[in-house]
Each structure stands twice: as structure tokens, then as C-alpha cells.
Length: 321
Ligand code: COA
Image 1 (tube, rainbow, N blue to C red):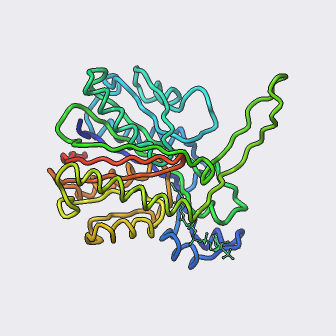
Image 2: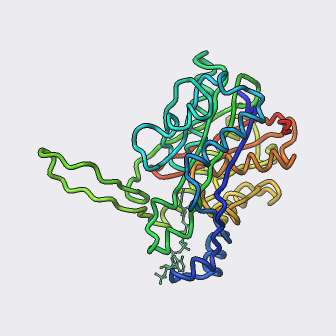
């Protein structure tokens, strides 16, 4: 499998740390030193559907593939206002695609999960051209009175078009049950038979424990992929890591003893955009001409579950109009 098109879309509204300090007991210096985040984009007048469509259209356009030639749409999303139909179904028709679609919830590792699944579809001839759209609005599942979680996230979408090719070399996905360290619960409809009273609980997160799990898991995945492919950190041109916290990225970088230039970031401007984060980063780097033909990339993401996904790949340059 190789990537032949990329796209991303971000909300217009930028919210700085100082703006948050206007209604939360927080400060720019606390957020910046603990996370590296200066501002984030939040949906206000646009919708998640519009962001997903914009990213999807940009990816299709850069790939040169017509929407009607896409034969699978995989959508990565943690939550949106519809439980059913899927976000994939909602954007499929308007994008001009006519193919099977489903949503995948791999939390912040969702894009790597989607890539792994697309790779399997291509290898088994289930599809030849696949559109992956990761669209997330974590701002809508945070408690905006909780300074420990709401300051961390931003909204955004990314999309990739993939087809057969020599790009992806190896994947490593893992899962482990740690449901209590990070969760968002939505209430279900009551029934006469199930008396368990449910209520929606906005994002609950044990920050320190998630930090520890994230660093440990990402290092484990990266080391495993490097080791089993006979590589070291020095063989990787760029590490595209999930943008959750600058300090998490820095811990992984220090473990690998590689220079900062190999760890591009955009968390400063967007915060944690969940499964869209690596895709947005990839699209921006690719459009800026920073991903060279044949460059070896290592992607690594982690998220609620606890789930992780990492991928080793060679980049093929994309020509944008
Ligand atoms: N502004 C000011 N103070 C804040 C704050 C905020 N936004 N959020 C928390 N604090 C306070 C806490 O209440 C605590 O105060 P106390 O010492 O009086 O109790 C203090 O800051 C330290 O909190 P702590 O949780 O120990 O900070 P930390 O160094 O662990 O940083 C996170 C907190 C959330 C930034 C960090 O743990 C983290 O990034 N974890 C991973 C989160 C993540 O990546 N989630 C998504 C995974 S996909």
C-alpha cells in the first residue's frame, strides 16, 4: 500500500491559552510548559461533517482519483452527534463516492488502525482505491469546567487516499484494557427491563497515568518495529508521532536519541486532534515539500482503550496543484 493523496481541514476559530484563562483557573504558562500547546482550533460556526468533507475532497483532488473510483471509505471518529448512521455514511454521498463505508473508533490511534485495515483490504483484493477520513471534535466530549482535560484538545480532520504500492513496510497494533484511565460515556435510552441508570459523563482522564502509558507504549511499538525490520532510530528520516503532549514526544525522542528535526510537531497550534493529528501533520509536511521521495517514516499513536498503532513506511512524493 502507498499513500497517493492527502488532505486536512481545521476550524477557523483559534482559541489561545489566554482566552481559556478568561473562564478557567489556568494560565498560558501552565498549559505551555506542561503540554507545549499555545492555541487550538475549535468548531464554532462550521460542523464536523464539513471539516471531514473538506479534508476528503482535498485528499481526492491531490490523488487524482475520481470519487466514483473509490471503492472503500474508512472513517475514523471517536464521537459525533450521530451514533447511526456512521460519519462515513453521512459524507459518502456528498463526496460523490458510492462504496461501502464504516466508522472505526480506535481513539487517537484510529488513523493507524484505518491504514492497517486498508492495507489488509488491498492485500486481499477487497478494494483498489481507499479513502480514509479521520475527523474529530474532542472539544464536544470535554467538560469545559475541567481545566485538566479541556485545555488539551482541538478539533480537526485529515484524509488520505491509498492504493497498491511499495510504501508501507510494517504495522504494529496493540490493545489493552485500561478503560478507567480515560473515558467518555454517553447515556443510552432507558428500557423497562434495564434499570441501570446511565448518564453522560464528559471525558474523565487520569493525566499522569495516561502520560506514563503513552510514553511506555509508544517506545515499545517504535522499538519493536525498528528491531524486527533490522533498523535503528538513525535509519528513520521522520517520526510522525501522535500530537498529544510535547513532553510525551520529547520523552520518545530522548529514548531514541535522535535530533529534534526528525520529530515535526503542530501541537503548538492545534492541540490534540485525536485520530486526525498524524494525518494533519502528514498533509502539512507533504504540501510543504518536507517529505522527500523514499524518506523512511515511522508513525506512532496511542489512545483511550488503551490502544496503540505504529507503522513503518517509505514516502512517495505527491504533486499538489
Ligand atoms: N491549569 C492550571 N493548573 C492545572 C491545570 C490547568 N489547565 N490542569 C491541572 N492543573 C493542576 C492540577 O490540579 C494539579 O494541581 P495540584 O498539584 O494542586 O493538585 C497540578 O496542576 C499538577 O497536575 P498534574 O496532573 O500532576 O500535572 P501533569 O504534569 O501530569 O500534567 C497533563 C497534566 C494532563 C498535561 C499530563 O498529565 C498529560 O499530558 N497527560 C497525558 C494526557 C494525554 O495525552 N491524553 C490524551 C491521550 S490520547
